[in-house]
Amino acid sequence: MESSTVALDLLFETSWEVCNKIGGIYTVLSTKAKTLQKLYKDKVIFIGPDVWTEDTPSPYFIETPSVLGAWKAKAKLPQGVSVRTGRWDVPGKPIVVLVKFEAMYAEKNRYYGEMWNRFGVDSLNAYGDYDECCAFSLAAGAVIEDICAFHKITPKSRKNAIAHFDEWQTGMGLLYVKWKLPQVATIFTTHATSIGRSICGNGKPLYSHLGSYNGDQMARELNMQSKHSLEKAAAHAADCFTTVSEVTAVECEQLLELRPQVVTPNGFEKNFVPPRTKFAEAKAVAREKLLDVASALTGKSFPDYTMLIATSGRCEYRNKGLDVFLDSMATLESKQIKRPCIAFVMVPAWMKEPRADLVAALQSDEAKRLDDPVITHWLNNPNEDAVLNRIHGIGFANNSDSKVTVIYVPCYLNGTDGIFNSEYYDLLIGMDATVFPSYYEPWGYTPLESIAFGVPTITTSLSGFGQWILSTTDNQFCSCGVNVIGRGDENYGQVVESIARSLDYLNEMDHTECAIVDEAARKTSCRAAWSYFITYYIQAFEVALAARNNRL
Image (cartoon, rainbow, N blue to C red; front, side, top):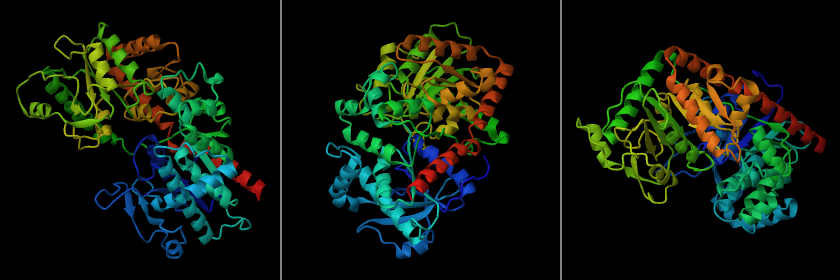
């Protein structure tokens, strides 16, 4: 959809990840911004936490005091709450308000009492980041209230303002707006339910038992009462409740006792993909770097036709399917594969430092196998790291007889890791295949990013992206560049074998077949552009404003 069907005077979006890159939500918002700006030029205001200092400034925030300057000159915010305004340094350059929120801690008990009385939010059992997130989102609510007052958005003004809040972390802000500003329509998006993620993270089967789970009961059992209570209250209070995939919509219906009105799949912008004229060179540079690191670690010489495979994402051993990936590599090792393989596990862990012996080996002409040649950076907790323990447990030796070499890269690939000194995308382009065998994955940006580079990917039917592929195209590499493996609670071994078979299939392909799959992957990624997926958000805007209108 290229143009708006909803007239808006102001659109706020609040998230802990505005100008604060932590996970996938940053990618959702920062890539959606360009399309929103095209529809509602500078009527879009992103609100994020000001968690930065002069010594550690946000690399994504361009402070511009003149932005919203007229409002700031007259702003009446809670005592101690301050803001900085500017632009988000992403395509579209949307307006951003960063909020200094620590002063709200002094008022938290008063607000917690209000939220209990008005919405039934149980903050008594709060711990961890609950107070911090609530302080931020309450301050964000106060900012929205003051900007709306400045623009004279009142119950009788007939102006359309929407406040969109992402994840439980901002739920308290939504409830504040619901309480104070009936004239503002509200949207709440859960990208993953807090209790669903906790169930999976605690090793419990989610899907085969979903119908028997009660979200409130599981929250008590897993000590998640406050976060779950807040998330559930925000979902029920919002004028429009959305989530990012059908698999998570079913989860919400059971655990939050509310079916989302709209499913808003995550699109993206391909601005991180090099133009075709520079693509081949970027791919060659990436492959050379990846092969050099593998050779320096193992002392082996790898041919140029070596198949490079990767998995990546957050360090959630079971939820992200890291266990499945490693077992699949062991199964692939047992097959008669045509080309040698290197499998990279690019997952940040508790990294201590880059290996000095590996740095030296990269600078040396002498080929020598290093001790423990399966890891690029030393860890602070090697004995407790699940990925490293599984690599050792399977027995990956990375010696001259290994058909599959496994290399653990336990650091953020931000260009300054000390070994690759490249960003993730600059290495992803060099891969021949990626695997993301997630158990819990409400959407799944990593496989989408992969196919944008023409790198075929394998994922599972438990990811929102995987379900989108299954519902929109033929599930074959040559048709879409993706292979979605059916995954449930009872077929772990089957999934491992299917992934190994799929990689063996890719391993056998010739150049012509690779080119067909490459092109199919790129075309599929184009279908997930925000210019198409924004239509679901327009629908959410319509639902929210209709509910607001019925209330006034």
